[in-house]
Length: 289
Image (cartoon, rainbow, N blue to C red; front, top):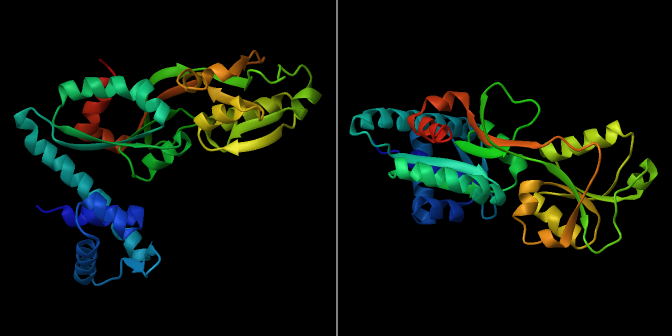
């Protein structure tokens, strides 16, 4: 079977850019355009609205995007079952995580996985860990590494790989110390994550202390928080694992703040229904070794 048309369409539907999608598809933009036009003619609907400046999905295009994802997922699962007699898995898995997680946790996992399943291709995408769970729920990625939130959607599976304390950090050379009173905390400039588990824990901590924090900046990505704190802009909150792997770790200090924030429980996320897929099962099983 030729599944290239579906894969090409998904690349375009996710990037909404003919140039970038054509690079992912390894074809020219004009060939991709012809491919999509032929698909629209076969379906009898408009999948994409496009002009010289932008590309957007029509309602039918969004429906077909989900169909393409489901069809390819079923095709890959069927293909793996047919190849099972060869005792060697083939195919690809997409993995999403932060840059820090890629060399803190993923390196060891991939090393073990590659030794057992050398024919499986890993598509690694890095980005803001606060978006990891949404990438799984929207079926954009097969597996993600992220911190476990207090409440996990029923359709998600979680497999823990490590724990990391959540730390208050301050500039090393600036005159920042642990605030002793609520008024001092209220005057301390805070550099916090825009969203995610870290922000939820910090918000709850300030609420318990009955303090209205002075937020200097809201940042996407923990690495950027370490950078801003090292420059003396304020006090930040980051997982210990991020600080340990930061080149700026020697320019900040950890504050002994009490009560401590609840730690990060870091692990793999995947959709429960995808755990039946041989490739996802294989990746999941590596953690039990």
